Length: 437
Image 1 (cartoon, one colour):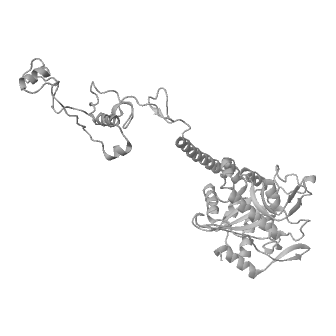
Image 2: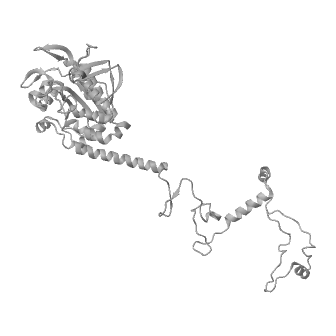
Image 3: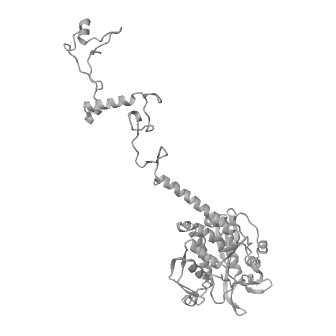
């Protein structure tokens, strides 16, 4: 609030032409007006108190302070670079000095790093930590891709030229469904899992196929169809044999031909599982989660005799690599005489589904470089690094399906237990594999 007299200039005045200043009395005498001491005056308020000010209970002193602050803010700033302009420290809208001029007080959460001449966010700031986390994830995945490509460069199929000739070409896995024949041999590695079991076979040339599975994957689908190892078929050059003998009779290309003859499905790619390295791969991704029945099995005499023992209660279990491969090998159990090859095929499909699900967990991401290095070594295949990476992506996109198994009835042929297929049922299962219906 500003008080003033009704006289516009009661103070001393300077004459227009210069000269000494005149007192109020001298001016009053010459002008004929009363002097300041004799003259009565009225007190006016420059800004009357509004209704809001009255309701807020603001005093005249508070109104004066507010008016002075508004005047200070509206005061023109000296041009930058002039001798009257102070150095500006605070940026636009700063609080250091009138109108944001002058040094700005330090901001919380910031610090000045010597030598840089400006304030920077500290390393622990959430946005900075997020940026570092994203950068680390990108580098981690890039490292894993490099290791995967390096490891996959030497994983060719046995007799690769003849085997590749037996395969039928197809489109890219991400866009087109492909039929992949997954084979598990009964050979044993020289070191590691099952390497010291009695009667182990170390030669792929004379191996039998303990596992046969057609995996239709790509183009948004992922379905599996298992073939029991004891299925009786006609193997060219060897006559009527169990289907697992086709490899020993004519190699991987003979196995492809026999499977195509049995199912009518053209095989586009082949994967041969390496038993010893597959254990390392499952451990590298952190194990697999599988639903099992009551398990009380022994392999090669059990753990007491250098083999393996598996005891599991019914339910969901997270298995290590050794436990998962042992489960995939179980054919008979003393506590469940109804457990057959058909049950084993279902467990093998569940293990593959568990591996696919485990690949996209935080545990697998932490171990991604190790898993990327071990994955190609766990299989032999005609697929190169790029196609294998498409396979993993296509399997995740395709989801999971119910286990399906070819079969029929158990019988005996030439003194051996065999499975006699049911053609009508097999055709129905093959159609479901191909079309999903």
